[in-house]
Every structure is written in C-alpha cells, then in structure tokens.
Length: 91
Image (cartoon, rainbow, N blue to C red; front, top):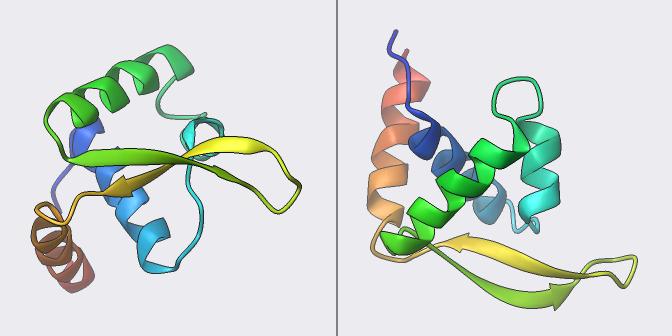
C-alpha cells in the first residue's frame, strides 16, 4: 500500500466526481476532507492544482440554485488519474 500526497488525493477525488458527472466544488471538498485536510490547507492545494493546470473550473449553479465554481480535471491530466485508479484498484 502506498500513501498519496494531499495534491494527488484532492485531484483524484475531483476526478472520481467528474467521472460520475457530479459537481465538485470547494465547499464540498472541505466536507469530504474535513478530518484529514483543513480548509486553509485545501485552499493551498487547490491553488497549486490550478497553477499546474491539473484542474480548471467554471461557474455553474447547483440543484438548489447556488452559484459554485465547479472544478474539473483537465484533459491532459485524465490519463494519469485513470492510471492511478487502476493501480489503486489492484491494491
């Protein structure tokens, strides 16, 4: 078993939600990682993922009409996430 760094864990979580066509945004990530990554650290991680062009985002509305910035894995990074999913599935 191997341990992923925070950036990879967050990117992979975003990838999983994207694959299921579920909206993923900052406050949802805070809820998902609340016991392992605090909100401040999560913001730093997301900034890094944006800076490295691993993720991008667009404004959209949720089912309850809230505006959120939906985060998606960029097409260049999808093959890496697919490989990671395969390796993690084998573990």
